Length: 296
Image (cartoon, one colour):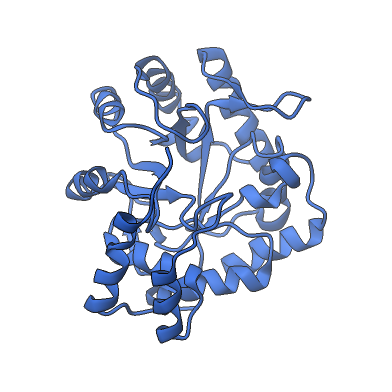
């Protein structure tokens, strides 16, 4: 699949890391509830290899997925890694045996998390590490992140991290982090329905910083919209393909990391990069958020 069919390319600011705008999110490679091994380990390996063979060179993961599971599958499937592959991971949580999600934000936790990612991915340094603020559910919560970002900046100086990003953060937290170190990407909840980050996306675009929507298709509650369905019907596409294509059209700094454990679904997601949305269709899709009661 050509570069243009994966949404074009983006270079993270101040780096030599250039990726296709359609990447892959590895969370669904773990078992149910993002816990334990997948039901089909060979299928998980096949999805990763298919993605890379198709030109995907941006994989999003975390060692707390599983825990350890997705990183170990990535290593099994792709190590030694092909030149140009960018693996982005995240810190901020841990998974105890009761399968809950706990904060892991002390300097010791963050340092241990970096070493867990390095070990399970089989790397000497991590390309990009996002500090993930674990708010209530997937909501944002104001509060200082200076201590955690400072720890990551120190790990970067030590050579364990090459670049730093943020996840589930407010505009104020982005500004606070930028006063400490360079930030190359922000990963927040955003899609054609849930558009609270419109102004943040535009501000980051002016700075050349990547914005990576998690839940680009609605996450645990898939997007449903008659407008989306009608647009898909006209284009001969699925509603989810149109939702991904809308994100690519929304701003040139948006990178996609849709996840799946199915090769067929992976191919469907990647095809979104080939869709062209007319000004009329974009206008219709832009209006969806105003019609939907988004629950916080």
